[in-house]
Image 1 (spheres, one colour):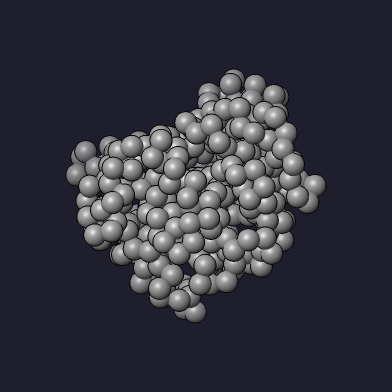
Image 2: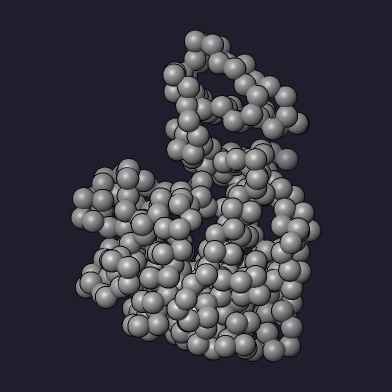
Length: 347
């Protein structure tokens, strides 16, 4: 458990994870999939959260249609620890609501915001990093983004440009944020890595009160709806516009610090992530589930129903479910949202 302060942990567990279609669906989104081991991603996330704080200071934010499925995966988790979103409005309204909820109990409480579908190892390094982030929040009255040092060129991640160095516990390095840079092209991403920028993990720590102040300053469209929470949650979500916390607050705020993590992190963003999370065979094939390859190399295979056999092919993603089979080039793995738009338009 964290020794400094009495922090809360918020787990963002909504969303579909459409880049893992056709396995990930509205009824069974990415955070409920066994993409790394036999358990769903959310159980690993809750295990990490329980290393930080007791259950009574953990809240899972998700749509009501997912809560029953989470209860099946987390049978010993308290029922009152779920904050059920009546409508999906994005991470900014969800975190504003969570901050308001916590501020009713303790306005100066520190919130640690996690995503339900990331992979982080080892857990002890994660705990030490979050403890240092909470210390920076308390010591400097700043909002903190946890960053990781890039180990490859990645155009799908936001990058964080560090500025002035700050004091931090545990020998970790913290900096004022000079700028957040969203999803650059490949050449720009290479320049960011050379310049010592961090990846933005989307893991944040801040005081509930200060987040609400930043929302008032930078996201007035959300702030105007906050009084509706005094009435009921439905009224707030009916009125508030959809937005994400990165654009609404993070990229605009001048009160952010970035703390360099000591853990390894993967957001498990699309099927290509399986090549980083599972061992490959001698020909570079990664197979999760039932599959065989013959005279084939550098393929990604995932099955949750039936089996797949690959013969004489390379650099493909092959996914089999009970009612669909998806085949695409590996270099198009990040483009599944485009495919789903086309399929929706033809439906």
